[in-house]
Image (cartoon, rainbow, N blue to C red; front, top):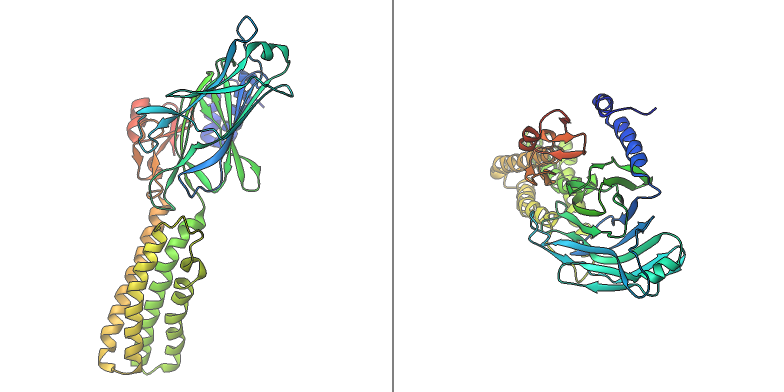
Length: 403
């Protein structure tokens, strides 16, 4: 079933966003005539642990518009650049991408005349017009670059990744479709581009999703910020707080049972004081670094150092008072209770901040201001961009719903 106009689409969206997106994408694919539009393919890696990651950019020019004439005149196929510096929200300048390898084919034939020209602001791929006209078929350009997908400054797992791409296809059609594949363990934090619509995520593989973005131009400007969406990466930061906090509360409870002369019940509580922290603090993953040349202090290490500094003195003091020195048991019980309660409370606050999207660094797709509470964001249905309250008021409420 196809919906006839935007008003009917918005009525569908009010009930179910997924159905609206399906109808919108179907309509856009028809409008763009996918068999003739320029197509761009990008696949992002699951994780990035260094400044840059190698990714492959593939451009397919289905119906190239070549200029008149032939011979040895070079035809500009594509121009590629990135925004610089990557850590700045506003673009100060553009730089050409670094390319390790590239290939250009037309039909099934590799173009021998294909060449690269690197200027101050962009990288251009050229080919001789005569060779292009002598071979039938579509043009396919593939390049491998380490500078399109970068890791921004920050602390893992809250660091953001930036996909920056400025692509011009002079000999292509006036409409371009971007097929962007990435792992389901990363998600968008901010989307800045000149597109008119981006689809929801469609499953490609078990842990791989694809988004389809529609650009009504032959020049696309993409600046996408990504962040980790793997729950285990966030939950593991709360585990030391929880295990040490629970252990100290168990130590306080063990002292209370001893003072009440309930030593049989105190024994399990005392075991709980010792076991979980040792399993957490001295696990292999926390002792050894995965690489000798990538050795940066993470927030996980900081939390482990903090809870170790809290746990070891208090656990030693608790054992000291259980063995003897009964006059210090009340003091030790209070210290364990306060420290354990504080750690458990810290864990609860941390999980609430993660749940509300405070620590994941979401920003407005329009003005790039930080959105501290994810539920306060608004969704623009016509472009599927997430905007802040200020941009929501400025752009009007007609095509917006709550995020």
